Length: 84
Image 1 (tube, one colour):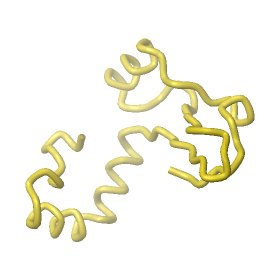
Image 2 (tube, rainbow, N blue to C red; image 1 turned 180 degrees about the horizontal axis):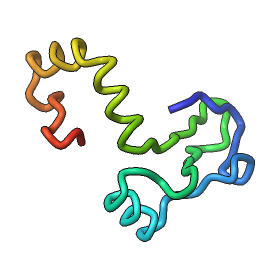
Image 3 (cartoon, rainbow, N blue to C red; image 1 turned 60 degrees about the horizontal axis):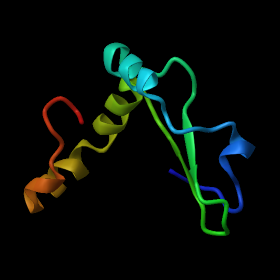
């Protein structure tokens, strides 16, 4: 998630993923094209960039220690075994 003040979806070429985009991601573990969603074109707006499976695995590996500590604090903060 990135801070994106006064930026809109149109500025980024972003859009909410369509059902066929989500199916493709579920089947292949990556997006067929970059997907970005901008939330509010206001001074405190932000954009979300959806990552693929390889990126998710790298982030989870990098922060494995922190994720383990969070999981010990509260079950809700534990990642599911499939990485979701």
